[in-house]
Image (cartoon, rainbow, N blue to C red; front, side, top):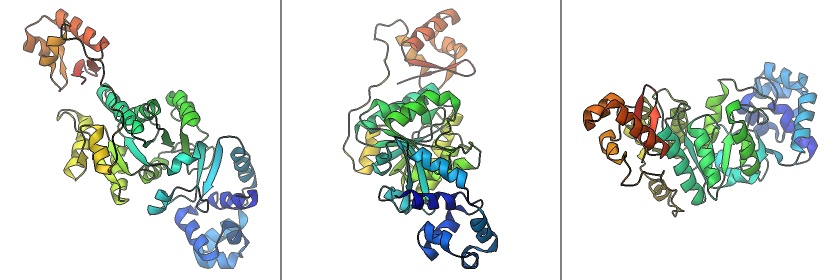
Length: 360
């Protein structure tokens, strides 16, 4: 797209208070952004009201537009508008498609067949392991994994996707040039190099709370379905799942322990009709896709391992050392030593509150 026309798109999206609905109304009434900007204030007022018309006429945003055009000219940087052939067709199906997207990385991934994986920021070790294994298996099956680059499940999904033959999209609730959260800085740069970072928010936009529900509609909109791995009842992941259902996407959820707060959101989704998922193949079958390479399970102790018998007493629900002593008849010192060996072998995860959970 010529710089002048892209500049017109940018200028419109930077008008305070205009929003997606107002911008699409203007495009419907006048045509391309350059034609919108060429219309008089009176004509604009008839379309979107006097206050917005005045802002459109008065707001030139030249510095921000020039900065965005300079950013887009750099290698690996792109701005995709509704008028571009590269604009992802699946986003045209959602009620509020963004007028443009800032993309850092491989913009072609926007149109790849995708699946979203989301979940808790405070994920358990088992949840993180599950998200990585599912993402790796889906990546091997040719899917691009979309998530939000948050801590916990999102980060695990991106990592797993990059371990497979596919790739990943990180949809941000801030400017695409803003690294957030800082703890995921290394992952941010890895996704930029091997996948793509995507945002509808102007460059430099901070990660304010109101941005994330809007971000979530793009995570689900870019995918054929959404898999929720772990989520509390108040989790933002449930917003993504609801938006996915409203957009006509498939919703999947991984069940967990009835005692875990991070399973309650997934169980609520399943009660509401989400498809229960025990393996990557469950999702691939539902989407009508062939299976890829199955991601390997975590390492388990050999049958002769001293702590192997303790796994039978641990079961799949979290429990503490005292409970394991009662079940096994072993002393606390012996149980603690066995748990340490099992944890180092990747068979057990330590949870908050002195509890342990089996991983398999």
